[in-house]
Image (cartoon, rainbow over all chains, first blue to last red; front, side, top):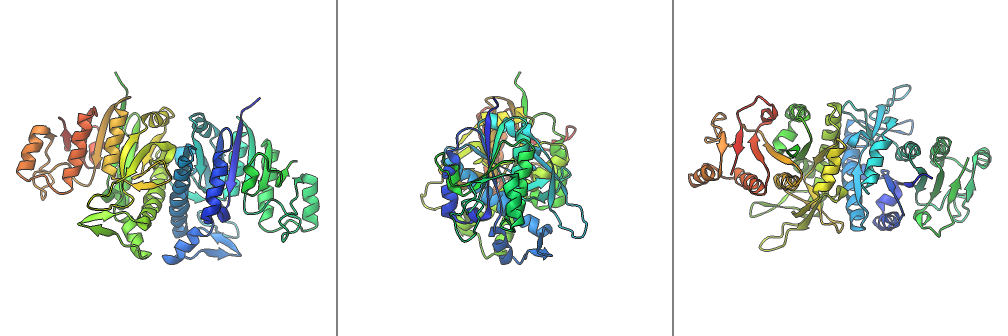
Length: 259
Length: 259
């Protein structure tokens, strides 16, 4: 039987709150066996941007990554947040190594083609080098990815962290039995957004369609769940959505997703 | 005979000039065999700091790394500069991997003890993990270090890039035949600072003392040369100082240092 690897994605809401982040990193460091962390962005870059006069550009509600925004993201997430997480994990005896997709050429992407909208330096992933990640895991290093990729022609690209996590999980599935955790501020997929206890414990293709039809799942949860089902279709073994406590072995309140 | 490894340090003046940096990276990518890059800082962080109202604090002419300055350094050098160099090297088919000393716990340091002056979050190196660097070289990865270390207790520390380069070279000397290159904007150690052609081609302990006595070597060159001789005393095979062209095999105008 193949060895197991856990891929955990944390979102901006966890990163922005020092106490929550600290709680998360303790839980993450305790996961048995090889593990990989992917961290998203949040408001930190936007806040710094405002201080230096770089405002996020939006077209039809979608964020555009211009040259200045990319530099800002590279500084804040590729630098400050990534290295602070690495240093904190090292203190917890988790041998973390901070990475962008450019490092060791692990994640290649192409600049998103311009159709109706030019998203700027936004990257769509083309390849994930599972062997390079595997070499790190075999050295007992824990890769910590920020949400940056590159085009192998010198250009860094801003890339959705949920997608990075699912694409890494998919790539690792050729070598490992993979579990993908989407860790955010809620207990899982909720039937009633105002009730934290209304967690859908088991979600499969059929129940997902029902929830979609009844418009219970919408907004930000939609692309996340698309990533989940995409991962399961491409041989990822287990996909879960929940808050930090999901990473503890005795926790049962989170959403487990199957085909 | 042991395999060779080249350790190259580039300073702030090279990093700040896009054309010079590009020229350097091409030359660096062409170095045969395993290689390691260490990049310093420069004015980029200071410039960004001024925009967001963080000014460098100086005590008796020495820079103090307070909390805000450390964040700034982590963003600009650990993030922006490091990842841009990695992406540029990847485009040159050099399989670069960007690192701080916290990553894979490669460089541990202690916060500089407070005597007369509290330097803040400045790190004095205690250990370099040569085996971790060796594991990377064996994967054909080219480590690219920014000038940050950590104390293994969660704290990142600002550390002199010249010292990082010499300490890495010293550590690697247990496994490799090491050459340490200090690459900066001048052709080498100059007898006359106003004459670029007055390069001291060979410098040893004896001639170094003569130049010191005659006050020809002073200011910024002093700690650099102390690092050079320290490295040679601790089994580094070759140490050279010069500009980008020193990395080309047919170049002869640079300073070669021996004991």
